[in-house]
Length: 385
Image (cartoon, rainbow, N blue to C red; front, side):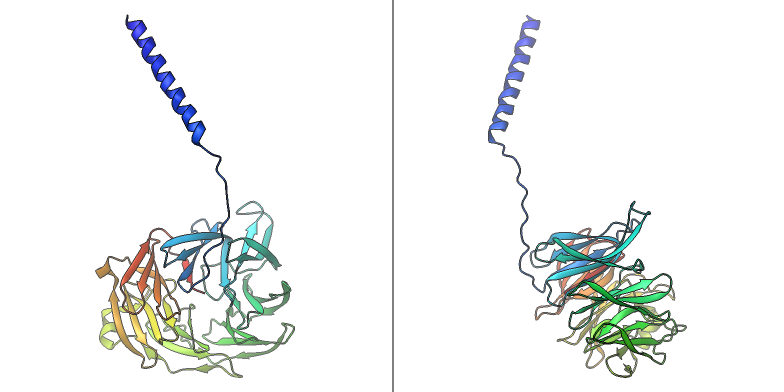
């Protein structure tokens, strides 16, 4: 009897399983893969450049919609990429390096184009195998003001800049930068590199993208006593450079000779004595219409300039006075290593924490809007086109 009941039980189980399988096959349909266009671009989209340390050969660029509070997609970006958005917001440009066997083999340097409406790869420009490979910076790949030329920083370790015609997708020239690095654009026909002496080298180009003039400035950064961060913030046609000790100085490279503003301090004497200073990977951001300057600040010692900010300090650039001080811990936000701000009339402040979270705050009040977990890492860059 036991054998019969067990047999009957097994038979019933198998019959039930067969019925379930048959029912599943009856209702399941093959999955269809589709490609949808992204929503129309708006000012609350932000790109996160993630160089994927310690595996730098597999960088990615994430597109995040702060209004929808979701990731929209990603762009593959190779080894230690440079990244820039075209002035019309339609195309992303990635300057990067690929090796035939991942981390070694034949090297190919390239500028890759991506359609921002679909994130489809739309073309490439082969460039000399000299592309600078370092932590992200807004100025290792940049556009001229009119968007007709692209500048790619090279380090071999000799420093130079590759000049590219965007329309024809051709390399126009390579400019020797005399050991000065990066490319800060000024107008349609010139760019500037920073030199280890604290000077700036500005190169002017002709209609064919060839060098016609270069001007070396006097030192405007004291590299021995108070070095400046390279991630300067654009403002009123020039740039705002912030130093490790919290001094700010404007630089305008558009004229025949560069113009440098009088340095001013982010700190009072008492705050400086307490050890407050800027810090992180991308320390500052500007909202030009509001004349607001956002700075990631922390308490630290002489070597803490890379430490993320525990507070965001906000300044009025017209009066050079602080108008707000946001303690991130009060909103349970981790220290922020990179900041960026949208340029619209309802601006958002974006921050990347040391724990790889993307923070979205109201740029007028500092109120937390959202935290997106695990986007990029501490060697990331925020780009808001």
